[in-house]
Amino acid sequence: MGQLDGKVAVVTGGGRGLGRAYCEALAGEGAAVVAADIRDTAETVAAVEGAGGKIIGLPLDVVDMDSCSVMADAALAAFGRIDVLVNNAALYGDISGGRFDKLPDDQWDRVMAVNVKGIWQCCKACVPAMREAGGGSIVNISSLAAKYGMAYGVDYATSKAAVIGMTRSLARELGRDWIRVNAVAPSAVLTEGTDEFMGEKRDGMLDAIAQGQSLKSNLEPTDMTGTIIYLASDASRFVTGQTIMVDGGTVML
Image (cartoon, rainbow, N blue to C red; front, side, top):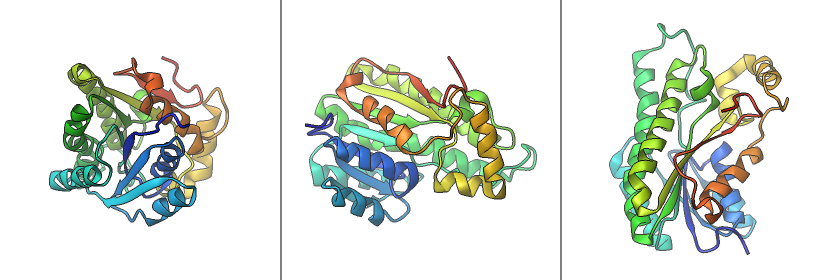
């Protein structure tokens, strides 16, 4: 018997990397999963179904409110409820780092639109179903960068700090509906997005990050999934408004 039997979980950015790992983990604990992504989700769906899990893949552009609403409606049509929303979709590997005063204006706007507004819009789309179900759990993916800072990545770090502010505000607003809202803030995780963002400097940057941690290793996607399961499950039914650092002991709050 899984910790999430009978629950339905929506994972944005579920097509690859961390999103795929979250889908696999949630399904492994018994949840019916909606992998929603602007990218193709076929490989995620195949992986979950191959392990005996229940999943559908849906297209989603988090910047488009209509797309968010259509996704939520399709999830309800398929599974009848929404209990968990993991707001994972973000621009990271898709952007280029640089000095703060040299970042292109359009990149700044795109990062804020996807990483901040996208979470707000997915919450607007899914919260009515959670209210109907009598409660739920929203898990927003922030970043170590929000707490530690990120030279040459001020757009990304700023967007992830905004995620923490949104998490706390929504937790206060939605508590009356028994909807919990928490954030998870990882350090760099070994995914395609990290490879793309760091480029040819990847190995040196990952080594420097690991050496700055108490646990001197880089995160694998599976190092994140236990925290996601905890926050999605009833084990955390009295936890809300919190940001859990999964960073090997870089920042100790």
